[in-house]
Amino acid sequence: MSNILTRAATVASAALLATTGTLVGAVQASALPMTPTCHVADLDLAVGDADGAAGSLYYPILFTNTTSHTCALRGYPGVSVVDARHRQIGTSAIRTGEAVETVSVVPSETVTAVLRTNSPGVASCRPTSAYVKVYPPNSFQAEEIPYHLRVCGAFEISPVQASE
Image (cartoon, rainbow, N blue to C red; front, side):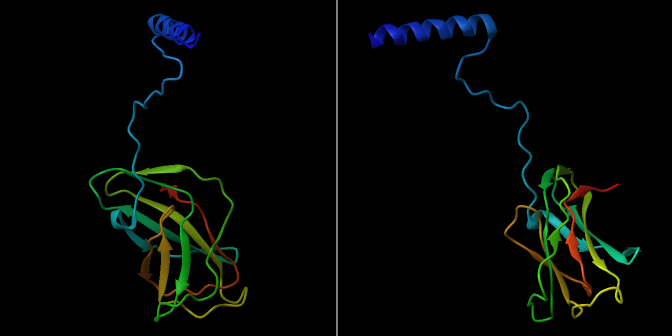
């Protein structure tokens, strides 16, 4: 009986393939290859100039693709501030809750995530950092960027976005 069922299934699959070009249960491969994730080694990381508004300071975290191929970033970077001895000062930046998108980064292109803190005098401040430590999205490897940043009150990070 099982031979009859197997043979019937084979005949039905062949007929379906002949008429539609699709085989039931077959996995179709994507026509486009997957873009690899950007890793620390693929990127030049930097902190851009602060921009202030309404008691807040906004610092762009810049991710520049230094490779000869396109790579992708999706989500939030991990960000913290550390002292000269490489010890973390306070808690890491919290996520803003904004929706995330996959951002393709072509060679030499820069994309950003925005770090927000309050202006001094608006809220209590942590000691000034010696470095900003950044983990690209979906990475377990970080880079410490030499930068003197004073976190006051809020400490938030946005997801990576294409630069405008």
